[in-house]
Each structure stands twice: as C-alpha cells, then as structure tokens.
Image 1 (cartoon, rainbow, N blue to C red):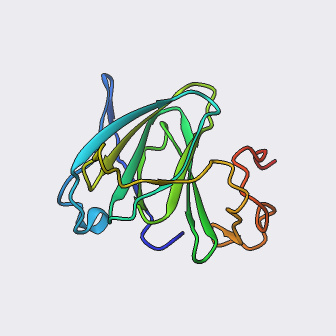
Image 2: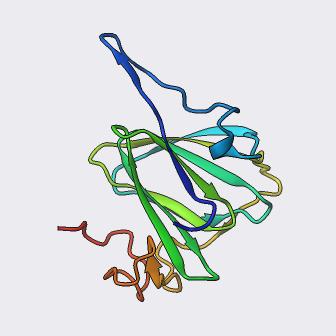
Image 3: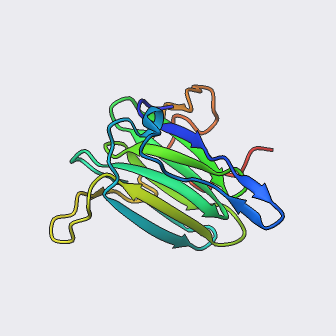
Length: 167
C-alpha cells in the first residue's frame, strides 16, 4: 500500500440482540497516531456511482468506514504512479486511513446503496475548500503498480473504475 495508508479491522461484539462495535478511540495510537478528528461526515451513494478524484493539500487525512453495502476505495500517488485499491464492506468492518495528499475516491460496488461515514482531521471550509479535483475518468491517471503489483492487467493504462471484477 501507499505510505501512510492503513486499515484497522473493527471488532464486533455480537449477541442475540445484534452487535456493538467501537469505531474510533483516541487511544488507538497505533492507527490514529497524532491525528485529531475535527469533523465526521456521512455519504450515501447509489450503486455504480463513482466519487473521485480529489485530494487535500493542507495536511488533511481522511478515515473511511463503510457501514452498508460495499465500496472500492482507491488512492493514487502522482509522483510514483502507484495505486492502492481496497474493497471495504459492511460484513468486514474496517477503517481505511487515506493521507489527503494522495488522489482518492471510491465507487459503490454493491447492488444496494453504500453508506459511508468518514472522519477528517480538518474542518471543511466552504469559502476556501481544501480540495483539488480531477475527473473520475482522467486519462492521465495511469498506475504502473496496483497494490504493489506491476503485473496487474490494469497497469500502464488509464485507470478504469469499471474494469470487470476478477474471474
């Protein structure tokens, strides 16, 4: 994975009533390190919708948690042309840490809407947003490795969010 991207599995405590889980604790220093959460957002995304690409150049880090459905979360480094791809879903709860300087985004890949809650280390400022954007299908975004694999058939060509799943 790209440097700084981390995944933290979430433990579910299940009984006959359902389940309970902790999704963020400030004593998880192995995961959050020195980051301080400033804002929490909720995103509801219809199947097949792609929300990409953007990045934050003022030090923001994002933490993604898929609560319903499934998502393909990607981060791309312009300097190295490396791409990290993570599939996250409601049955395997995990928090995905994305340093904001990477181009990042996601696609809802389930047959039902995907529900994402995400934590940010900076407050959103509508008058001066810390967001740089590029099109979701930007032909200049060409990974040379995907999850450290140079032999992935999707490398060395423009990133295709809709590439058919592995068979």
